Amino acid sequence: MDWAAERKVASMNPHPIRAYGPGRVNLIGEHTDYNDGLCLPFAIERGVTVTAELHEGGEVVAPGLADDDRFLQGAVAELRRAGVDLPGSTLAVASDLPQGAGLASSAAFCVAVSLALYGIAGVEPPRPVRLARLCSRIETDWAGQETGLLDQLASLLGEDGRAVRLDMRTLEARSIELDLRGHVLATLDSGASRSLARSGYNERREECRRAVELLGLESLRDADDGSGLPAPLDRRVRHVITENERVDAAVAALAAADLAALGELLNASHASLRDDYEVSVPEVERTVEACLKAGALGARIMGGGFGGSVLALFAPGVTLPDAAIGARAGPGARYL
Ligand code: GLA
Image 1 (cartoon, rainbow, N blue to C red):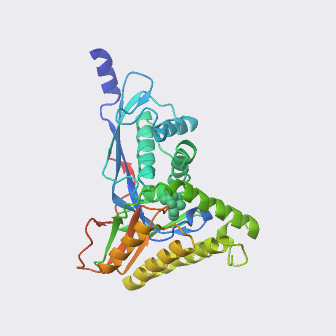
Image 2 (tube, rainbow, N blue to C red):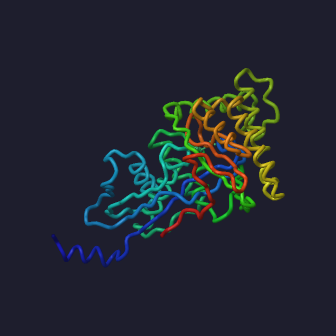
Image 3 (cartoon, rainbow, N blue to C red):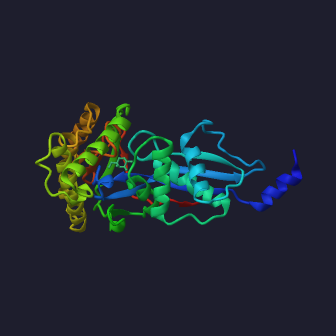
């Protein structure tokens, strides 16, 4: 043991860096982010914490992760590409966010690990949109998982008790008070294996690209009618158009404290994701039904689809279904 070297390292960095990235719930606005559309997510009170400590070697290591962890490799590579000189460091990862449950655990990890690495390098992290893009590249280019910016921006821009209306065309983020008047938003894992998630998600994105091409538009944000397109592209476009409208209707329902209307919008979003966008699976349908039977005012599939969690809105005092987890809006990513 080289104590002198250890002391030197310790004096350079007396405190380990701890960075936190929350998961997210998307209240409404699904499969709109990569179509330049609108979304209304909030960061939840669960997430991923990455602790980084300097060590003598030149490498970034994370003993708790597989050597070939693509997210870590991607984070290290993307930061280096951004010109950050990374010192040798050891990362430890802790999470209270379930994986594969549609709560954006990969984005939460990418956000936390990137912040930890910026921190240990002593470099100020970029502003949220740039950092969200960097994190999204880790998922897409390194882990082979296409993703828009919804999850990353939700994690980075979270605020206690507030959601954020994201306009993905202008990247304007508007903070929205999430006063549910005692109602509870809860997520319930459908338990469906997400084996189709990646291929299904990528296929939907491809369909949207084709629709944009056929319509001769820059993005589906500009579409006002896709009914002339061949099936199923006509239905896909209808989902995107109506879902954007539902986001602003949800913002208005929140402002008017009309929670019944918000519940209806969740139901309408689900019907559209099931019938027009076709991203539901039988387990999700059963989970939505279980929520509605338990008295939910509205319930819908959330996230990329083909499994994952259902989001439901319950009136005050209603007993949540077994295994449902209340989702409160918590603060965004930060150093602890
Ligand atoms: C996944 C992606 C997001 C978004 C949603 C669907 O969570 O990572 O970018 O496209 O699906 O709304």
